[in-house]
Amino acid sequence: MWIFGSSRKKLPPAGVALLLQFAAFALVLSGVRLTGLQPSPLVFAVLCGLLAAAFSHLAVLARWWLPIQLLFAPALVLMLTLNIHPDVFLAAFLILLAVYWSTFRSQVPLYLSSNKVWRALETLFPSHACGGGVGGEGKPCFRFIDLGSGLGGVLTHLGRARPDGHYFGVESAPLPFLWGWLRIKLGGHRNCTVRWGSIWDSDLSQYDMVFAYLSPVPMERLWRKARAEMRPGTVFISSTFAVPEQPPHETVQVDDLHRSTLLVWHM
Image (cartoon, rainbow, N blue to C red; front, side):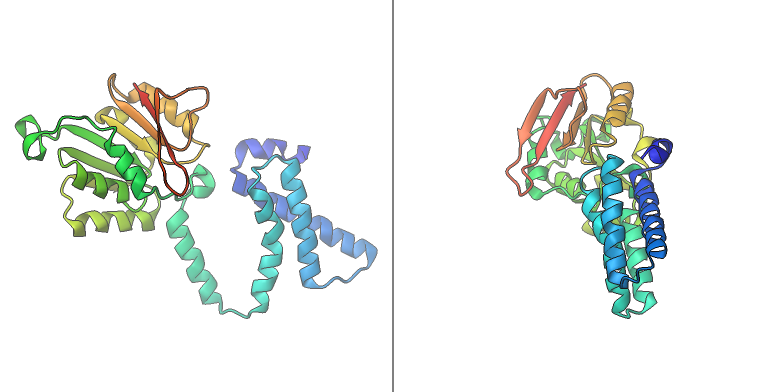
């Protein structure tokens, strides 16, 4: 698979997977024409899927890409046989785009943390509380940011549980951002704020606690950003995903469906 070696360095995995699908289609089509066979559309699609999955394995894509590559073409053929109106596909595409947005580049899908993770986060906050929910001169005791805040569940829960802090979120996908923004506004969470944007544009020096539930892919880069920007004495927390070669200072095991683990670094 040397022809994809340079592409893998420039393209995200989704781009590589698409190239491999095109390569599989071209090879199966060439084989059919050379042999004179006339397979049904579904058999043709299954052959494309098998070849695309094999290519993905040779290209060392993540394991979860293999079933996607295998089933993509057959699923496409089966959907076309249902005679679904094109507007349905357009609507589905727009909804998925609004939810996942730049996932193909960032490789960070929408992960939603559990209520038990939210409660576990409370144990990592400063033990003292400020009267009236704010510190001296009307300022909150501490500032917390959720990098990739999704639907805003972490922010609104902590905003209620610990009103002595100010909770910020950043989310790049339009639909989750809108959901989180409405959740905060309609719920009257005055100590919560969410903005639409990239986590890489966030200045982490402003926060006492930084929380992320992303994916394994950006963790090394995020760690470098945290080390460069976060102040001494602040706390960096990752749910589930570790930083390569950086053992956490403490871990909190959460008894939820995904057996989540909070990894904690004291900066």
